[in-house]
Length: 602
Image (cartoon, rainbow, N blue to C red; front, side):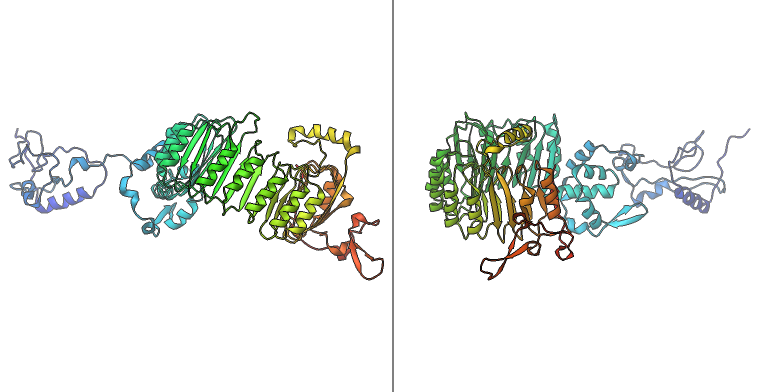
């Protein structure tokens, strides 16, 4: 028996079969034929020359070496299959036979992928806004996807990044272009998780954190490292969380952040003492301060400061020396807000000695030892105030008169809530003498002398106390007519029984806890009124308010009955609540359409 002989093939057959072979796709399996000459491997010794075995497997073959893979000295046969393989890529660059696009990506992998991008995302975004992203069977410009995704919250952005590669690229650029970020940190959240999110935002300049977990120096250091260009930082503490940052840690953070202009932090009861030095900081808000032994403000460009101290009697902070330091080291101060039970006349004198010529807004809250003499000192040194807040002080109608004499051309906001020595006469005088006034807060001024600060938990006790002392109350009437007043607050004015308002621009009115206000003696001549707060008022009063602010019955001068003067010279309009005859709401001449007003009773 003769041995197996190879079948001859022609060059034309070789080229035809090899073209058909290369056109096939999919995974190529092993062949029973020789890879050099095309003959069967069984009992075959290839006579063609081989390449150097010492050469690496991945070396590419040049066109000059193509003769090594040519077929020669073979017989013609149309049935032989010839495979000629030419390696043009090294093995290290070969892609694995897997489809990575179909694998689910975890959120953590998205964050890790952001860290590995390197210089790929440093290109300008304007160069790619004309590209298109595949959405289903169609395509959408990147600029449209950008406008949609930049309005999504961070959690939705992470979900959108897992849809496809085009969306993932857009979300990565949104993270890197974000300038403002608001995050809520849940309880027991690791600092590394917050740092991974912050590290994705290379252009972040404004950061707001709502802390449901404790705030410590580790979190502050993470913010300082992940946000090198941070300009504004706000930290809000939720109930149950504690701020453990000390004064030294806060001072180092402010000194290291050369771009920081705004710092607002709550829960600063653990500071103890601090030294703040910065040439860029312009706004500083610190709340819940308690027993500070040392306060140094080396902030030459500071424009606004707000220091809110705890409501504890054992607070040992020296406010007088603090005011002296502010005057020496912060000459550009424009807005000052201090809330403390230990504010006194000596603190006000220390403030006036600082001679802050640019001061425009002054708020000294809860200082029961601030009197009319303090108002005199403030009026002499700071005659250009636009806002004055003396809530919780002991000033009287005389102090209100001095305020009206000094600030008639500048004052636009006056807040005198919780001032028991102020009567309805002082409030009426202020509205008549301050033509630029736009906001006025008179809460808990026109009330019984033994009334306390009302809270939702004390409403029941306050009702019992008012009902038992109602026979001894001195009721007062309030008439306000002002052309520019926009917001008026009369919350807790339990001694007010009559109210007449003629304010064409008034949009917000607070009547909470005005328990003794009579519905027949209430007149609201305010066509632009949008919101009325009537929590804790009688149902009859709430119904009267809803009737007068409704869109069908706008209170106008034509609704009032008219009388002639005693000499019969002219007619004057008298509010119906002070006349014997009530108006008829069914008259069509009194119906005037106006914007809808919301009455809040809960």
